[in-house]
Amino acid sequence: MSSVAESNVLEDNAAVEALSAEELVAEVLRASGGEHVCLTSSFQAEDMVVLHLLRKHRQMCR
Image (tube, rainbow, N blue to C red; front, side, top):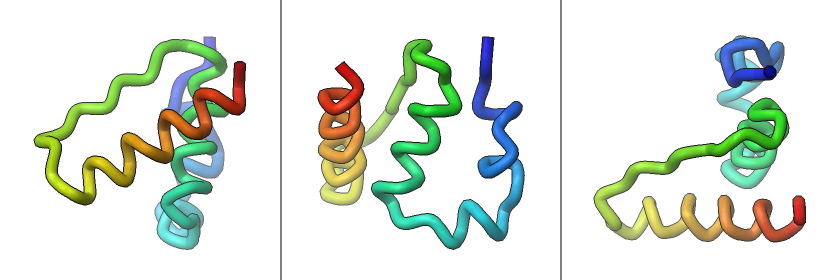
């Protein structure tokens, strides 16, 4: 079972900072290995952007 902590890209702070939001969401989903991913938010504007990206990539994975 893969986890986010095991991902080389996600362990490198400089690499994570260089990713766009969309690339970061895609990398988190890839690193999860198909396992469930949980997003918690306060439903503010920036959270809705992340939720949109997560749903977009989740649909692409199906």
